[in-house]
Length: 159
Image (cartoon, rainbow, N blue to C red):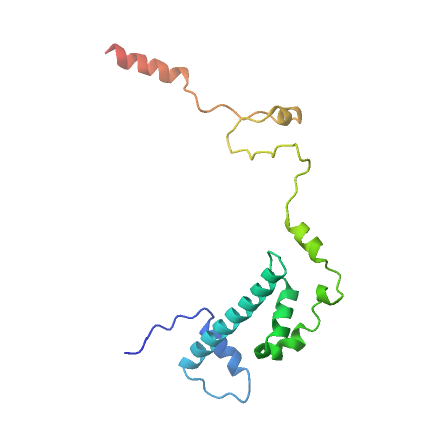
């Protein structure tokens, strides 16, 4: 029995609409956009895998446009994309991006090595002394009980 599940990662209706914009395309069978969607999914997966390999090879943590360009240039199957990626600057071919600078840019730095990080304040917490000096009033204390509650408790105990 055939698999009737036609879930796709890309919208079949939009693929069909793009296909029908061409005057040479007549009627489109129902299965055609689904097949095109699956082919697109597999192609993009392969492109991303190649770009990820280039990214790891260069020691970077983020896939950049020039990683995609290098993947397209080194893979024969993707040579039809070379015109599209021709305008992307490649730092390894005399571009402006330095690989060492790229590695350093990926690391986060503190303002001063000995300073601890500031903690986020939760709603309802009292303000710090620094905030009070800046003219902000401290948050009201709503966690305690009022005197009326204590009177009611004493009435219940006396019964």
